[in-house]
Length: 181
Image 1 (tube, one colour):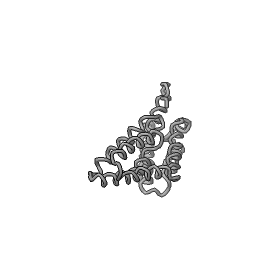
Image 2 (cartoon, rainbow, N blue to C red; image 1 turned 90 degrees about the vertical axis):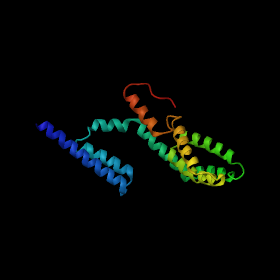
Image 3 (tube, rainbow, N blue to C red; image 1 turned 180 degrees about the vertical axis):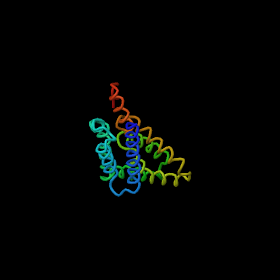
Image 4 (tube, rainbow, N blue to C red; image 1 turned 90 degrees about the horizontal axis):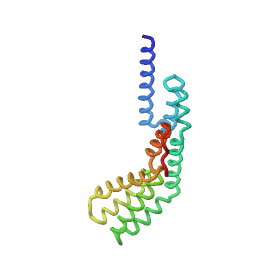
């Protein structure tokens, strides 16, 4: 009977921490990564998460690679590299819209294969909107394919999307062969 009570207590603590974490994610009083790590540490302190499992997560290369991907993506956005690519594309919108569509396809797939999809799509949205306006078509006819192309590009490499890295980490934890680049 004590064991059942202890398990229920752990579940209640977990649910309280989970709900608190979600609220903090929504209101963003502190950065999301601080909220997530603080919640994990609290789970270890309160005995909900075994410390060995927490250390196994931190020793897995997948989360660290994801962190590095976000740093790389942020650097490309902040340095203006993606903006320069966007400016080049938009300068050719009126001259040759079909060439610009082809260029968008290639740039979206290639850049999404190596950096996070979100900044790629964010940089290309204004260009796609301008292109749709120039071609006098609905923007959704270009925005939805842009999203799909970014997802497809992300699936081309191991580092293209965090999902690939996480699945690779799980596969390695089950002694399966790691994915290649």
